[in-house]
Length: 171
Image 1 (tube, rainbow, N blue to C red):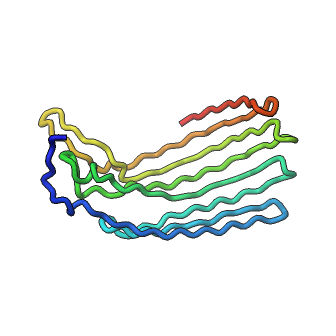
Image 2 (image 1 turned 90 degrees about the vertical axis):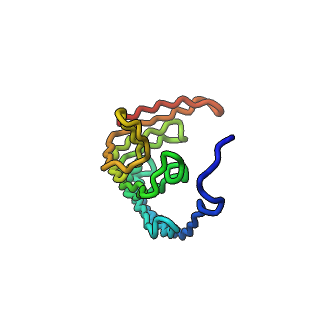
Image 3 (image 1 turned 180 degrees about the vertical axis):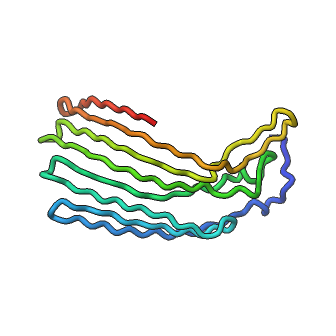
């Protein structure tokens, strides 16, 4: 468009390097676990580590009990940092999610259903601030956000090419 940046062409460069590792263990007794971690080094935000732990247990090849604990982070976009509404002091959003549930599998995979409960705690959420008196507008980090709820899912296979799915989520 007709807009010009006040910044030089090379001022918006950022660099990121990441390394991810995962270990999966499946036992014949039905216990399974996945452990994973990721290390990121970012030129503007420094180093961050995220992880996931996913144990599960399969009982009689019909019932699966599972849990998940994982962390995450999200860096601000270039627009949130450097636009006319940008804020170069934004911190990355970070979150921790804990969930657990049960899943049922019928014979011949005609039906499966799943119920999951979860809790997610986030901090430094990025939001757009607008002052209605002065019209000043820019991106800020909010305090925190906590989400929790449950999900129900079911799948009925009707014939070879048709299935009927039901989903419900409460947040």
